[in-house]
Length: 309
Image (cartoon, rainbow, N blue to C red):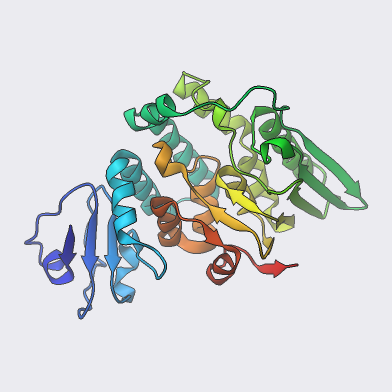
């Protein structure tokens, strides 16, 4: 339901789960000292600076009805997302990754995620495992996602190789730049979905992420990290690239965080890296809507730094 801002501020309105929209037209409320419920609270209408505390704002080009349907279909994941994003600004990047991984592990055991897994058709066998090409010219290292037949979907071998590549950059202080790119028509379509659910011990899955997640090393060399995007940049591919200090994208590129439909949240560092780049409200908007973002929109938001031919 949509709540008039006056009713929300007065405290006389009972908010209804799993999502609340605040109609801001014609009113300028003050939410600075208001506690939020444990589910998404989203502003509609004219923007007011006072809405900075809310979870997100329905910007032009986004559909509030579509967001409502997405949240109603996966209310636990949506609520977990916004509670995590509210917390992240008070944490360091390293602590943020810990909090994100714990929240992600919780959702891996949820009924919403299990329902998505049960209804999903696995890809045909025969795809080659992921690989990463590592080249060096002088003090510059290029890290290339090399699994074009799977649109650079990141599986366990590729994830481990990415972790090693960024760890190398952190160990070798003579490396002055690390450039991440992809082969084929896509930068990356994100995590290999066929690997979801393969680790049934969710505490162990969290422990593995803490040791092998590429983001753990990428954030430590972020000042030397450059990402070059061409084509689709989705899910964990985007989450890793967003740690870069500079991101370029071709004009045909597009960006998406589709995890909510799977009953989970970004778990490869994206809640941390995208919040750092575009703020928690636009990060929430991307996840809750599941909408594709064009290269031009990504430039306007600051998700990328330049468009290239």
